[in-house]
Amino acid sequence: MAVDVLVLKETANGERRVSATPETVKKLRAAGADVQVQAGAGMAAGFTDAAYVDVGARIDEAVGNAGLVLCVQAPPP
Image (cartoon, rainbow, N blue to C red; front, side, top):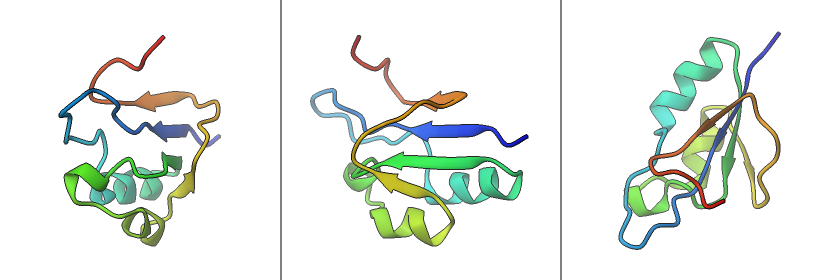
């Protein structure tokens, strides 16, 4: 059974980090995880949506349910 992983876009002012780089997503995919990345999640850190797609992630504007949510700072309530 694959784990669903969601990488959120950071929303805090001045936050430039991303919780998973394309290299991290590549490793998660190799381990059998399904990875969804919120559109633009890596832009402030210099990673394009295409870089995430190239390693097997799905890009989506809206976030869905996931067994594991990755973020640098706590998401808004």
